[in-house]
Image (tube, rainbow over all chains, first blue to last red; front, side):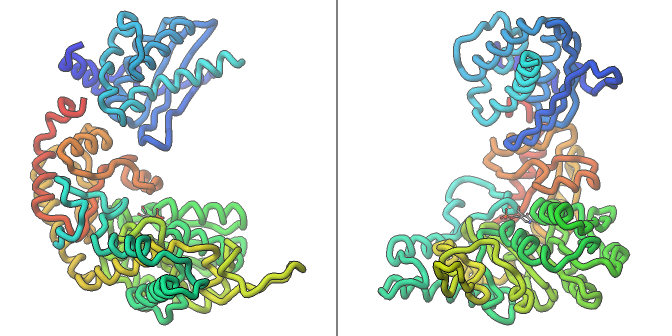
Length: 144
Length: 398
Ligand SMILES: Cc1ncc(COP(=O)(O)O)c(C=O)c1O
């Protein structure tokens, strides 16, 4: 992906994030996860609605940098409607891309915007932030 | 001023993160290297030349700190590992035994974590009540607001001399007077004030005062706890071991030594204490008043320049120190810090360990410029230029 295209995708998702703003979860259908970590000042809440192995809905909110905000927005846009199994596959390939291992470029689509983030090692954790949250939530579901 | 004294400044950088830690002058580095290269020895235990020299320097350091703080006696100076260590000793070695359930401690929402969490833990353990003095519209503490919070239950006022995000210089002399009149302990966090403004423990009538070496051009791993003699003699050590005991027997009998030795169990940070002492002498040779004047002038210049840039938000224009918190409108603080790093301008983004301030600022994270004596107008100009050109920010950081 061209650098200018990568920048455009990231800036677009940062300035017009998808599904930003939390929803009222009166019926307790969502799992909520907070990404607050000591190594990073980003503080994002992500809410997942997952039923019968399918991701039905995701929302997020919080204050975060351009990279993690946009990555969260793209992740949400990509994963809604996918199965948990498919989500695992995105997760695996995305992590491989960030960590400079072989990965399925076709599959990742807009997420390829972070394909060169490894050039700024201290920003890798920003790009990984939403996917770490996803991983925790998927692990939690599997354990139960 | 004195840029040539700081080896880090040989690099092409603008260092504006002094609130986190300051740069170190060569004289301090030399003093520590000399200890490690030429007279390594433990203190209080040797009869050979190197040990005698080291002992003398360690003892002299206490005297140097005492004079720097205008304390009455060098026995009121305890070396710690830093401000946080000192604060915890005050809360858990002294206050825990002096305060009673229902007693009130006054702090503010602008305090650093180290000035808030120990009190909250004691609140949980002991049932004391921690209350925050409201800040004014500029997020500063006023004497009027402080006085309005004082009641017969108030037993402690625990405040920073200079806060680390807003940078307001509290009127510690007035606060000390109020505290004394009302028989209240006055605990001063001088982490951001030593080496930036004069610190005189007698004038501010401080019961206790704490700071770290590393923010005042000195080494990491060392700090100072000042306490009035009659209070230190009631404080309990939190750490026991060698160096601080007079004797101990297999029967379990032991006797601990006098203040301040009883608070320095184990081998202290010897090189760091020597470095701290050397750096205080360096600071005194320049004059703290001169440093303060320089920083205030530089901040005024920075503010006047930033006010010309429409998309910059300033949070503490008026405070009289070298600290300025800002944001580029619509840009997350960390992205700004990454952008400025591209121009080798070092600032800090985040909540700066003052997480309660968000209630007052209505924003969690800011960029913070914090100055010291070596910052210059040219540093400010470089920062201003970078911020002027910040429409390009995403092209640069992505
Ligand atoms: C106002 C204030 N108090 C206390 C501290 C704690 O100092 P240290 O981390 O050296 O113990 C800091 C450090 O950031 C500070 O800015």
